[in-house]
Image 1 (tube, rainbow, N blue to C red):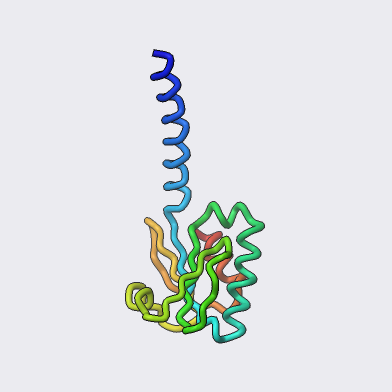
Image 2: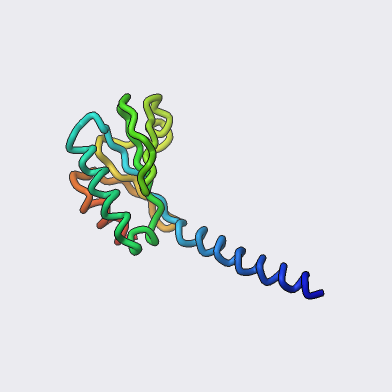
Length: 127
């Protein structure tokens, strides 16, 4: 009986952390860039650094960068970057221009052209 109680206690503690993680990242943010343009690559590097040091930003939404260029950027950052050279993500989310941020939440979906990492932060803080 003691083994069952310990197992149940461990299960409940792990289950609550999984539910918390699912609720915490119910908002998603996709940032489309072309890394062959130096200003857009700079936005990625600046935001990655800001996101790394800000627990508030990390709690607001899951952020993913989508790179449409043919250059390869290794996915070794805290903010994932997807190399979309075949245009799969572009067809799926249809950004109007680059760089742009698309945020998806249960309350609103919207798209905004950006020029700096500050605008991405403002989007996340407004969610």
